[in-house]
Length: 398
Image 1 (tube, rainbow, N blue to C red):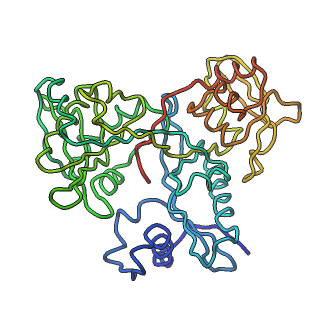
Image 2 (image 1 turned 90 degrees about the vertical axis):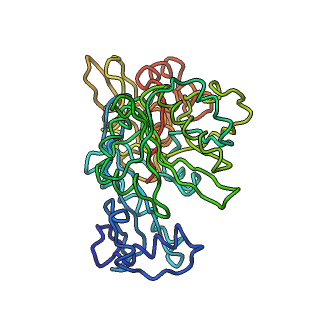
Image 3 (image 1 turned 135 degrees about the vertical axis):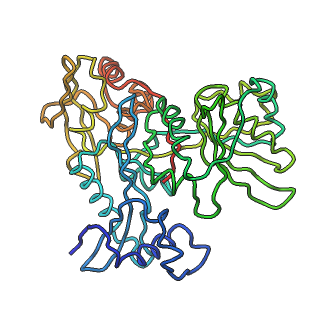
């Protein structure tokens, strides 16, 4: 009999072995050591396991975030550490694990499920879809010298430690308030996932003006002398001056590193600011994936309540049956509702692309042009009113 349930203390070693093999196989077998591996950073999140006749076959972890979607926060768990040892693969255990995870999310009342995939193709067939593109920048520090000239020479940087996280968390909250799918961070997350790392703990610096923290960044420096890279893990700022201060801070490492790398949302115009944009490599990256948990609850929560409209949508979902069918969404006088129906649909779409529409990552018009949405012109217009485009970004890894 296959069962899904929380993992207890007796499963700590097995969980470590499963995830170590899945995500760090090149390091070879590592013996579980309580003092080394049973640490706060590793224990963030609720662990679950799939058992077959009492034997653990597959594991995962859940992080209970709230995600900003068009300025409103909704429960949006982050799924991570999905791992199955090779001797149990190709037996359908991960599919069962994901189905049970979604059922748990549905019972909790969660709206959207988030994850960072090891392979997009795998999770696409499970109904998740990419919903948060971002840009990775890389250049020599000297390419950012323009930032020193552009910004007012005010404020100063100072180094922080984990006890100072509350000084930068308001900057993060302001920064991500503009971006759909950005998530809240707990105090525990700040201490053990921002100020600590699996390999080398990052430096954390804040930029302060008249006693107010207005920007921060965390980073590590890798490599040997002459070939060092400064890699930014996390950053946030209140305004353009804060961004320029960060870039100026990076260019000040020109005597120490050969390359700096950092990541930003797709709407930040770094290349427009640069003196010579050709000196900066900008790579568009496909970011985190998302999936609606329960259409009858998710669509009413995510649609625009000021639009009076109704539409019937036929949705295909190969993983969970409660999302596979025809649904009638109605919005009237600020009240929203969604229920399953048997009447003919106005539109047809699968759960993955409906998720992109619902969170605002893709418009109905765009999806229709790609033949991911089948609907008449008037219905496409209605869906775009109900689910307007928004700028998506998820910079928190899990």
